[in-house]
Image 1 (cartoon, rainbow, N blue to C red):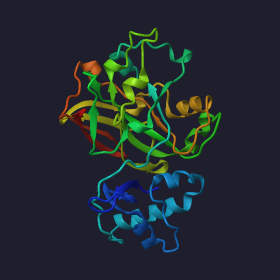
Image 2: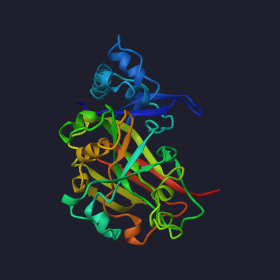
Image 3: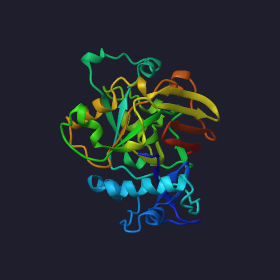
Image 4: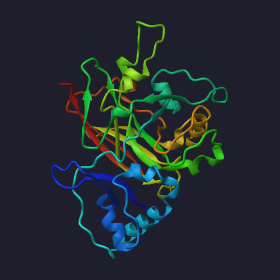
Length: 310
């Protein structure tokens, strides 16, 4: 499949009406206009990606029409106005599953002692859906933290739900991919007032703690998702630069594990873990005014700045 992305953008200055965008070579075009220009009989596209994900099993014709439009734009056969409206999150996931310590070097930099892989399984926690925020928006630093940290991660979006999904069938359940930055307040993930030493919910679920985007890329537009370069910079300085090849438990294993516990649903998002290079391992943390850029090859980049809580 020729590469294209699906964005959600605001049509016009000050607009609160989101529209679906077709992304070609990092430029956003109106998806409805693009699709109808090459496929006049095509049905109207949903307002945003959620509408497509909800009917993902019946989305083939829409995806093919979007791919045809993207190819026509790239080849110069179709010319449409660029859409300059602000990007929203590609969609608002109802459930965010996040895989912890899924890269050996990251576990080492955090001082985490892992059991042998053969004796273990993915460690997955949930991140609040209200933590999602789009590119170019602020990450708000809570007053109670001094150790705000970054984590670039490949986000897998489920298109076809299921329970007890076999590893060999896992990719058939994936709709596509996007980029997530799993912001973490390291000093708030630890507790001394309870016998439970970690509090993943408190440290990772503040509002704005999950920058997501800049758009969604369908599964078949990405080559091998287990061989993608992941990068994160802070104020232009490289902090993380690694490959998804370094995952301990691969994408298929994470899907199989999750679906052994619960029924996965269309729109579920899995943040698949971060590589080495986080602030905790460097003794360096975010402060108001800092700018993060999280990037994954074949998908795109999200940029977010840090502000202090009001």
